[in-house]
Length: 169
Image (cartoon, rainbow, N blue to C red; front, top):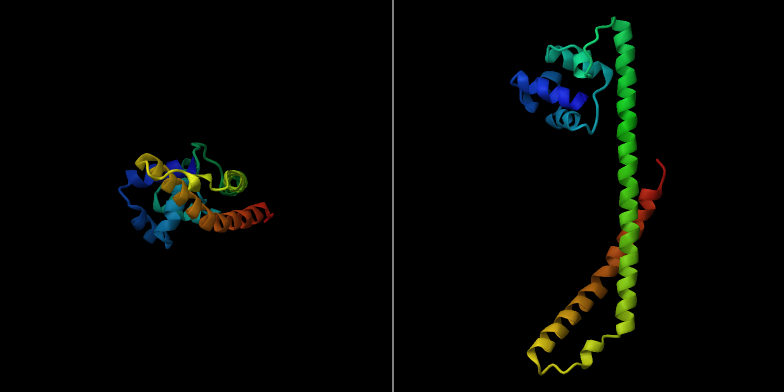
């Protein structure tokens, strides 16, 4: 909500992200992260943002209710805390999804190695005088050759990734 409101108000004022960043003494990427919802400004920066955009903080946060300064700072900090919790949950979810993708990649690599072991490169004894068989045999051999050389590095990278995504921060 904050990100959409901030973007809409900035655009309605005819400001670019770079111009807004200069007014707030931050880099453009910071404004971009705020507008994408990847991070949120702290309460002091939110007050500066409301001054630069000439908009009440409550409007930035999506409310039209006017409160006193002490109450608004408390409300702002509570809303920022909720937003930060939502961002943390999103990050945790992404980490879990990545972990499961890496686990599945390890299982897939192990399964392909098992299949290649069972087949024992049987295509090497095919009759390569037929052009279609020759093309198919070369394709199998190329896949096996590349897979056997690249898969161990991918497997180790995935195992390391599983280790790092499983750690608590």
